[in-house]
Image (cartoon, rainbow, N blue to C red; front, side, top):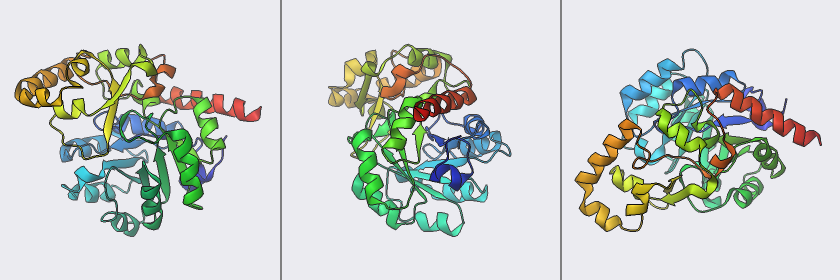
Length: 313
């Protein structure tokens, strides 16, 4: 067992959090990660109250966290109350100003996990009383910014004092966990490592495309946000696999916007059908370390076992 400030805070057997991937990380995945010894986190997504309620129910009595895209939740602050009323293991906030919401989380007595992509935001999270700070590097799948995990993590560790820091971005096996601990982190946040898990809410075609890919196949861009008409603020872009759609439009956002209705309909149809030539496969650079679709519990155990062997050496 690897004991850190993170495992002690949440009474975990493994210093691993699952990322609150919007539309992917539902209650079944979060519960599976928690039962395996880590802390699973449901992705609150873009404000679908009924979806969030259904996924909280799917987690059952297993203690899990709930994560929100902060700038999106600011449009639907009632979702935070919904999550807090379920007494989650933690609230996870990322991508936006957490200052209006941090006091509400703290007043409820729920641990606050704040994900940041810059040193400045790490200091804000520290000052707002975050119990855990996730330092997310650009290697991560989904939305992120431009700093790399390898340098961002120790810089944040040095800046935030006794607040446990979790490394995110490019961590997909035990080597990544061991390296994160050497950088001063108290654990890791994994998204890509779990994206092909049996419990994720993804079409089988998407999982198959992910398993077949390598880190060389990824792209950080806003092309799929434009296709989905989701107005993500700067500086955040999304890392996905390249495909025919991104090859066509990644360098022609004006053209994509000019054909917005047609391309949005084409994208939605492809997403529902699992057509990965058009719809996004949202993974990070660590996807080249994932070689199978398997239960989330096996992913947790594989990462921990490998890390323990490396640390013992």
